[in-house]
Length: 137
Image 1 (tube, rainbow, N blue to C red):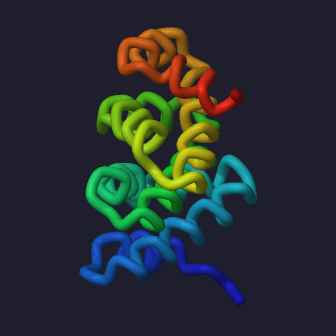
Image 2 (cartoon, rainbow, N blue to C red; image 1 turned 90 degrees about the vertical axis):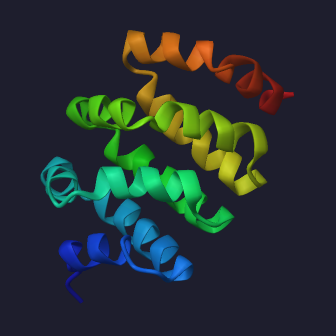
Image 3 (tube, helix red, strand yellow; image 1 turned 60 degrees about the vertical axis):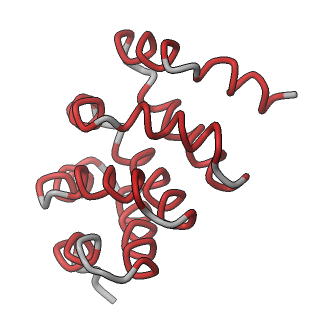
C-alpha cells in the first residue's frame, strides 16, 4: 500500500486529535526510508505542523510529533527550520512534563537537534542537560 505523504500532512491540519497523532506517527515511519523522502515530507510543509502538534496536541500527538521531528532532524536544513519554528523549547517542555513515552521521544529529537553547536547552546539554556541527566538516573 502506497503512503500518500500529501494526505498525511493534510491530516496534521485536521480537527481530529487522534488523526493528527496517527499522521505524525506515519510520517515518522516514512522519514526512515531516506533523505529524498525526508526532503519531500519537509517540502510538503510538515515541519511547522509538527511543531504546532508538539505545542498543542494531546500527549500522544506530542509524542508522535517528537518522533517525526527526530527522524526529519537528521537533515541539517530541517534542523535549522525546526529551530526557527521553536521546536527546541517545546521538546524541553515535553522532556520536563511529558509522559514516559513522550520524554523518550523528546530525547531522540533533542539528540538530532543537538548536532549543531548553536542549538546545543540553546538547549542548554532551556535546561535540557539536567533533565537528560535525570533520566539516566
